[in-house]
Image (cartoon, rainbow over all chains, first blue to last red; front, side):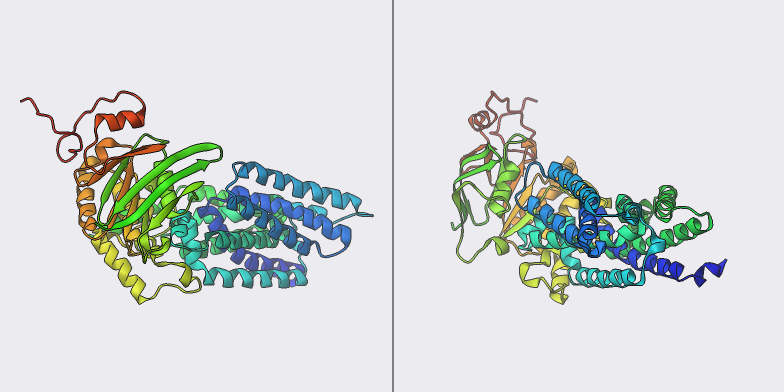
Length: 277
Length: 251
């Protein structure tokens, strides 16, 4: 049973699951409570342009993805600033433009691009040690920023307008949050691929939210669920020779459906009232 | 009486639509103004313009000396704007009122927590402090949002449809709480529900793109007809909703 740990690539994959879960549990919590799933999807798909550019010009596709991710986060922040009527549509355009650019860049690249599918659908078994280092650095950046701005992010995701009346720099904080989402998406691309990123960002927090009375607790639960889902998915995909990314997503959704059977929040309410009266 | 807030010739557009036209309003210290008007009449827009969230196309807003936008207003939005699934306790909601731009790298200190508890007490919410905000009833949520606004130590409290999710029995206590607050704080409240404007309101204005305002407490038929652009029948609800001119009841 434990022979899989002899392989370096398997150890790398397990490590990547642990590290990525930290980022997407924390940031996914904001995506779910602020209901910016569509925006996150737009950022995710636009990173494909950066991956293609990386192939064409010859730098690491992961850095291309970071660049395009941050650019699209800034673009969305700009749309919000001017309160444009057509924000939704423009994000949709950005979404497809990123994909289209990626495909074009790659078609310009001479020769064959073998790892391309792995960016769309993820291939956790091909994660290199350098990529694990990159993921760790992104993890640390995300973790520090969230700790420093925890209360501020809470205020703007709970009630943006009230936060604005307090004089908080809502626009800047929101932009920072979008950039963090972009970084998290880049981490997830290797794990489950661009197309399935949204599932990993939203499923663990969607389960956690119904068992949490605090944002920090929701983050912690999401991280734990993320580790659990990715590890189970990874093992199942290894033993049954399945695609890892898709297996992780299906496992997560099965657990999401199971979690719907438990409605812990109502229960908690009754207990609290009795305690407090 | 001291003027605390004055709006002069305010025009606000949303894209190409004129939402507020030539709004003039003078608010004195310890006023309690109820602004009524139909849905889509610009009530929320007016509050957001006063708060500085929306910029007027023209016109000016004057605040009394020594006040600025950030230390003067306590905003109480509609509870329906807030996601009831958000995992946050009542105490944590109220605490967020203590954040400000000077505290961008800091978290809450002892003083902030004391002020938050003080506000909870004023709104009779201490026993709910650890309960999830989303699990409260409409009226309780409203009180939490008022408590949050109070932590900013406001001079003017701005309430947006405070009774839209509150039944009338609870509403009565709610207005008593507001009257208490009104001893120290100026209150401006908007509502589309004419009956919701209680006896505690000192002055009433009607808003439908234009503001009709008479420095008095009673709504006249002429005011309503100007605002709703059609003949209006006045039906009085009796105490505690005495807002219309008194007319004798037949036994």
